[in-house]
Image 1 (cartoon, protein in one colour):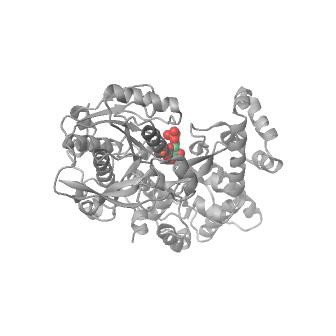
Image 2 (cartoon, helix red, strand yellow; image 1 turned 120 degrees about the vertical axis):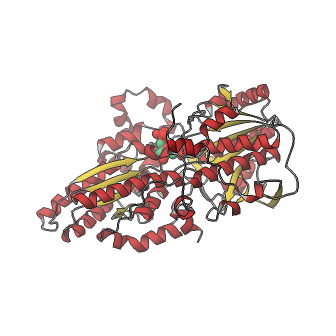
Image 3 (cartoon, rainbow, N blue to C red; image 1 turned 180 degrees about the vertical axis):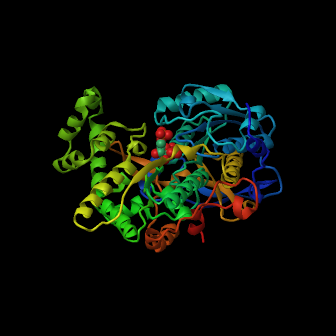
Length: 547
Ligand code: FBP
């Protein structure tokens, strides 16, 4: 494969790891854990993996284990920069434990385990993918691992390949499934361990012990670079308002981080919209007012950042989606048989009066999305809803009305953009390259220590990598009960933007100034080489959370 000069230089990059796992290391067990909520229910569902202690790896006197370990790795869900480094970290980790250890990659996501599609990941393959973006080494998929038959198919292939442990690299849903699998395999006493790794550009798989999910750092740096370029274009031409939607299925962390990096005029945060019980009209009025205020100063241009999940945070729409989810889950078989052009009618007839009215008031493109497009986890596919376009149109209509009333004197021309896929496979930043490789190394240590039902954890990440803390967190400790497809299920609690947290508070203290002034910051591209203050800095979010 031909390579650019940067790719060649990156291939030789040696990721940094915590000092405590560099040589001999020892496992230290902490106190027993409890789940974040619904303790009795979670304990009942996970009798074997509930209450396990947090573990840390500290400097030791001898290497952990010497027996060869065979591991199967799965990439699950959306791509995130750094996945290949988790895999190379696992590879180097198990080989350091015993050179006869083997790593298998299940192909195309969790379905590879069930359908027995795999390859052995040899040193030659791993070397091709070190420090690269993408998940193409083995591919990814969104098949949900939740049926006993799937788990049993997993046992079959693990027995055949003599696999001792499976590592699932995924988001909150996939790590929940990793824990269900760990519990089942313990119950069956089949000797297969399951370890999770926190992945998602959305940044919503985090808690007190998991500081960030990998990929968030690189993806937000890529989006911020491009937002900065658009800001500079807007400030040069002075003729467009750019409406930019940013990925992040539900939480608004990506949007907030990009706002902190680029200081746009308007930033919407879904969690705030929900807390303030705002309507679609409130949001449109807020943006239109910012446009009018700048126009009064002769500034007919600006930047609006819109989180992908916004629509789900508008309380009236959230209620509608909840009823839609329950109704569709209860009538799935019947709904599947309804002809496509009759589906919207079917939905309207089966909703309560209040929600049917809201559903019918939405633009057709949005109501179709809400009713028709679900992913295998039952989530609305918000990335397909063109909120940025919808808002730009609605703001345009409001300003036209204000113009007639003499309340708006400027011009309003728009451009819209959606940044998501552009950042998910970027070459990992130094932070993600180091963090991911460390997560992989730690996963191999958890396996060598006989652990199962744990998520690999690397903390203290605002400090230089040498001082990072390595360990494992029981996945049950992150769980609570939530309604999914009409039924209460144990799931890892999603981390939404905290309105009393450091990142939001900082943004809140600045946004009025950013709205009226042109306070844009142009971050420029990710730097892979150079001084640490340029090349190794973690996100502003993580720094503000841990200052
Ligand atoms: P994960 O939670 O699986 O990491 O996916 C994140 C994400 O990139 C979301 O931001 C986005 O809504 C979704 O995936 C898009 O999914 P798809 O790749 O299937 O279009």
